[in-house]
Image 1 (cartoon, one colour):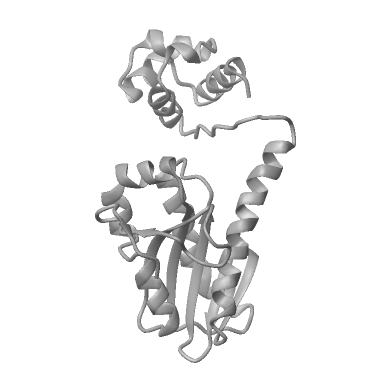
Image 2 (cartoon, rainbow, N blue to C red; image 1 turned 60 degrees about the horizontal axis):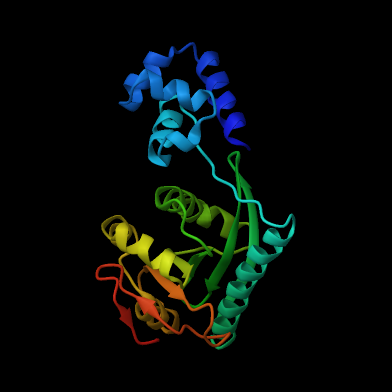
Length: 242
């Protein structure tokens, strides 16, 4: 969407909800003039956090997009995501007691989505939900979507004849300076949700006891089937590979 299209969309939703510009301004803690500029499409005059607050004030969500050389961007992002899938497949190939399924779609209680990797360890009835992220754009949205998949994982597994005793979660993020900065900026939130790191989850995979909730980085330039670096969310310092 262009800036003017976003502005028109915000205005249309506001009017549909029978809100005045001043109502939105008060909810977003900004001036009415700022709301007016946004609705006119003058987004370059307003910071992104303010535009998000205006969207929140009308119960909407701002979703950013990027266009680059038509379909080439889709192919680029798809290649990175596929590379992460391939790297994880290499890890599970060395763990014969695990079964790992890619791109597991679900539709349960009206909720739909796709789990990047759903892994099952029959001897301990351990289920592992893996989310792969090439970019960490919105931390809260990422955690919210991931939590929903983990919450539904038992029911998804039962459709495949897997009766899970425990459900674990592993968020794998493509390594890079931007993603590392975002993790560092939100370390408290991420540490609370995903306290374990790469070495911890790798040890757990070899001997699944209890549960694990982990975040680790996957090197984009390292060996195809191994983790080059991981970080502890608590400190955001690099550790040796597991």
